[in-house]
Length: 387
Image (cartoon, rainbow, N blue to C red; front, top):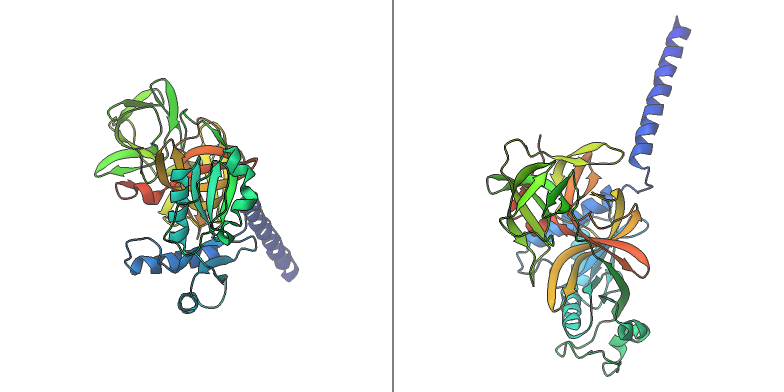
């Protein structure tokens, strides 16, 4: 009897282990590390900044943070005092603090001034190297790359057709990281759960939610529709465009479409992979450099990307769209028709909404994407995260 019971017990244990093993394979099939600990540390630090009530989102001593290849949160600060305060806040493990010369704010201002005076496609902050970061297809800038990376050593350096006199009030000049850009136009429609149609083109449902008390969806802002235009979903009228955030100086780019057809109901469901679906259970307003996230687009379906810049700005002529997140493609692809699709990640047994897809581009020969974070539209659009 005991022998029979033991065999049954062992069989149950083997089956349980097999199921757990399969669960792990499903969760880690893209070889993405569990970034729960560094992400929680980043969130805790970010929350402490909000309590300081500065006009700028980061304090003057902060140089940025990112998750490195060893799954450690790396924090950059400009003073020993700040380092000690953060150590008291976060404890002793799971992160590293580096002292740097320039704050995030200084680098961001320098990069923007540089972009306004030169032939630049986009700009952001190079947190890892404590530099300004410039994205361009300008040959003079690309050929001057090595000189620009040592710019902080020589204020009087001269480069053909490049204006370096952009921040006279700075005692020292930051280095400039130059990245070659080849833009891909993404004017078509996209999908987040399913595609939507407008003016003969197609786009997406990014996330469902509410605009005030009205049911609505959020999608990308660069679409060719205007406020008041009709949008269709699954061959039926879905509703009308009621808000469009796409102009010079805009923080992110997005549009909101009111759902006026009672046939359709908003939900917290998003498309996943292999025809599967997932439910959103939380919002993440703090994208962190180094974090792996998932995206879904109408044309290319599911993909995995890694965040490389959390405050990427694009220069369109003399117009600037600010506050987007730049990502490196890890698995999958991104093409025209993907604009507006959802970005999300899995943490603490929940799927978190991060933002909506805007564009794809090539940097130094590698595929990248951009998305508008929840922070940009969260003040007027509330994403549905309940059943």
